Image 1: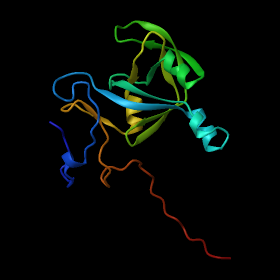
Image 2 (image 1 turned 180 degrees about the vertical axis):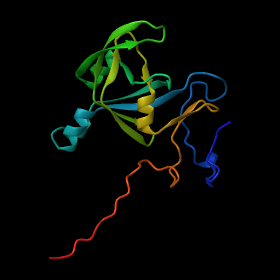
Image 3 (image 1 turned 135 degrees about the vertical axis):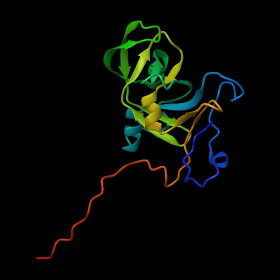
Image 4 (image 1 turned 45 degrees about the horizontal axis):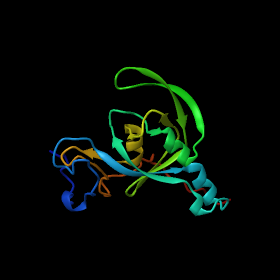
Length: 177
């Protein structure tokens, strides 16, 4: 069952996005999403006119969506395709409880359908060919997993679904001197 707020008056099934699923939503399985990964440094140079737009390094990948993982995980091959610098080193605990030394690369501009976010550091696993989309990147994209259809979804854009919470302030008028 998909839960919705009772005060929404939109038709959920007409406004929902198509998303992606390995099984097409027909049976239990893994959820995958087609995402674009772009070298953020290249984008910054292109915005400033120092790099032609056609030289911005971008790859489209099919990522395994894992809300139990924290970070975006990429392979060494994708890091090289995007020409991402190593920005740090760390340790990661794998699903089988082994602890491995990892490289961190970035920054990466990430796009799924209409949503974008910036990932400052992605885990680089040289032994994998998969991309893993973790919870932090999903939160930045403002997407959710629909378990019924096994798809990554973009929520409908409504007034009841704001993207930011801004502190209220009052603008005070100053008397002219």
